[in-house]
Length: 219
Image (cartoon, rainbow, N blue to C red; front, side):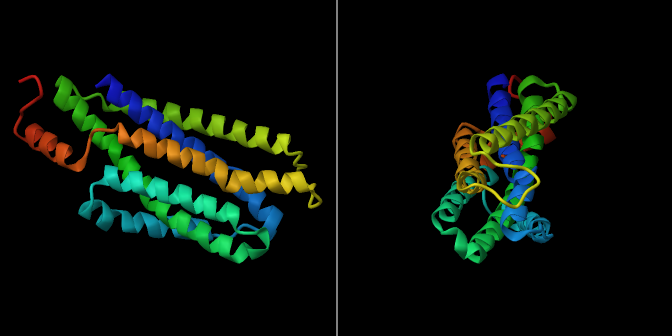
């Protein structure tokens, strides 16, 4: 149980670091640098993805679905890197697609918290929801801190100058990397960690049925 919980924590840490890189600061840097403004499209796209999470999560196993979503998003990040910057409209369209996909993926991964709680109760006959929630809050704060630090380190390495529209060519390259390949690395890490996450839909259906019947792993 502790191994599974640790794998979930690692999975969640990769997700939050990736989120911090893409949404906390990096999005503002990218849109200021290339588009001069940040619109509400990303929030709207995430909301659309969250709505789609329910039908897709019901039809498919959310663990396998999340695995393939992360690999697909990593591939889309590589596409954004390959496309020349002057075709920014295409890059914007791909990023909207990424936001829709990850809006749904976020909802799927949050639902895994409940799965871990149910599994823990089934395995140990003790429900530790509070501990799991506390661990998630800790990982969120840790991930945002680490992701923000990585963002700052890479921008500094590529000589990005804040509060100015005149940037060296190296800064452009650094921002593009942060917007494309660096998050893709964490998408792949998330996908790899999900492969070790054993609470598939079929297994959870059996565990939930056992809990409803008052049956536990050790009984």
